[in-house]
Amino acid sequence: MRRLPAAIMVCALLGAGLSANGLVPRAGTAAAATTASKTLASATSFKDIKGHWAEKTIDEMLRRGVLDGYPDGTFRPDAPVQVDQFIKMLIVSESDLYDNGERSWSQKFLNSLSADNQTILKQDYRYFDFKSSTSGYWAKPFIDVASDLNFLNKSRYSDFQTDMTRQNVAEVIYYTLKETEFLEDEQFGQKLASSYGDIRSASDREQKFIGEALAKGIIQGYPNGYFGVGDIVTRAQALVILNRLTDPANRIAVPVSADNLERSVPTSGGGSKVVVFPDQRMYDAYDVLAQAGSLRGTNHDLFETTLRLFKDADEKAAVLDRPSGAKEPAEETTLWLDPQYDTYGITIRLREGAFARNREAVQAFGNYLFGYNASTFNQLFSDICTKVAAGKTIESRKTVIGEDNVDIQIDNANKTVIFSIAKKK
View 1 (cartoon, rainbow, N blue to C red):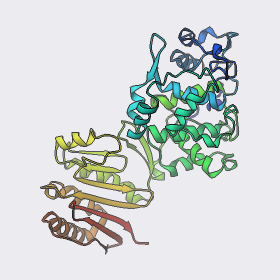
View 2: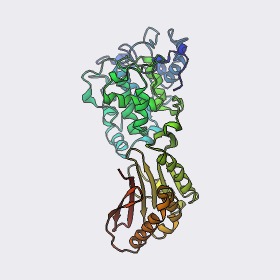
View 3: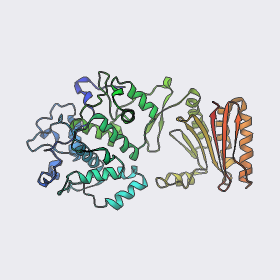
View 4: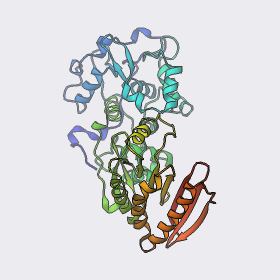
């Protein structure tokens, strides 16, 4: 993994926040709330920032109004960040600041949410103003919205005013990514995490969170080969992390090794993720998916390990525009790889002409998977699809072709056929 120069103290890359006298007022101290003009102050106005390794990021995040400094003119970048402070910064960093000091959720953030989470914001937080509570616990508004969006589990924290550790931050990152992007291949993340000498001091659950943050390039370990399990996160570190979380362009490039069967694949959001394949057969099958898709011209897309084949441009546009979480409209054919379960698959919805349009692409996939036994597969697939398309009732079944088990599921009512293919154990 690429390391930043030691002089930048990259070992501090995990966390940062607001301290008791900083931007976030404590309960009952409404007067401590910062104004928009203070929020927009340049980081260079703080006497303890110049020359700090995170000076540029601090300046950028301050201009975005994510946090402010202390009344004495300092920022205290190396002070610990507490749980409530980090959560507030996380929520604020997902908003846009206007010239009048008001805020609203950024459109990019809203678009990243599921339909359920969008509904939660519209119904339960319609008038959310991104301001600390002036009565009771100051951080309650931020913790509540983060909890309702499933960014954190409130019940796991007995005290929101404790200092954040690196694994605490990794956990929040994990659940935020789960709701706003996608999770990386868990095996890849675990491999990255296992390279650090102290990772066994973290629980299995914490290792999963750490692996995800490493795989995303949001966090990295120390130059001495340790991750820093249990280390406290600082204010400056938190800003760096949130800057990477909210803007993928700022993330650390994570190297991918074909020798380890790792491949960077595109995702539907315009980004990419690393997938670890179980063997060379499936690694190479990804290239076959790309070749099969090209047989349909522009009427296909390939995201992660799933190739979707569309009837035409209109169907493709309709599928791409469907609401998040909706199942319809759906593409007419899907070819897919499941690295986690070492399984290959074909799903075809036998609308008028679907079999003829996608036959060549399916055969290309089948020819690769079954080799000398491809003719057996092609004949079986053709026979079943022809009968189902004609309205004949066909029973689901299991068979063996060469060295593979083939599970054939048939939905006669919806004229849908699913082939699941896995190597015999």
